[in-house]
Image (cartoon, rainbow, N blue to C red; front, side):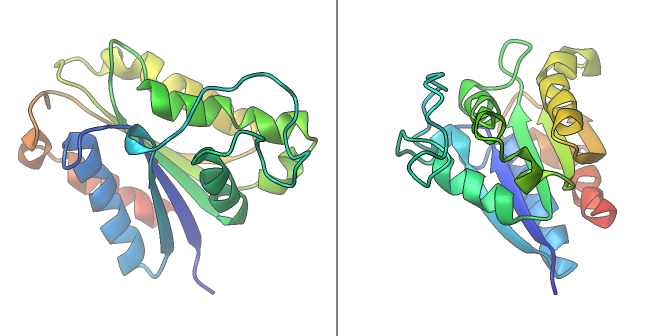
Length: 183
């Protein structure tokens, strides 16, 4: 049986550097026989958590019927979850952060055990030449992985990629693809 992997990207820019990193990972995972479901949070209809505590009361993770429900169900069914994103002002883009925030639905509904035990990774890129710029981008994800009882198998940070396609001139895509070996 092949492993199921959910990939959530955070950039609104199709074909941007974080998209290319995600595509490199996806290609490597599929080559290894994984079944991959990709969700582009940066181009999806995802709102913030409203803290209404109505999680799973209608049979869906969230009573607000947006694209998060599809992502949540894919995560629930997956063996591994990978997040890929650019850096926006020393933090993750708001749409992918909204996905992470709305994982609260599993906690509030008592369904955290439903998503425990997964493997996870995070991929980030930035235009700066300093990896430390991405520390607060990846930290919420890595801390969430631990809280959710997921095994963080890797973190890829790629610097100096401010223009679309710059990542092609780095080893970032190779590093992202190598994460597939860790699943």
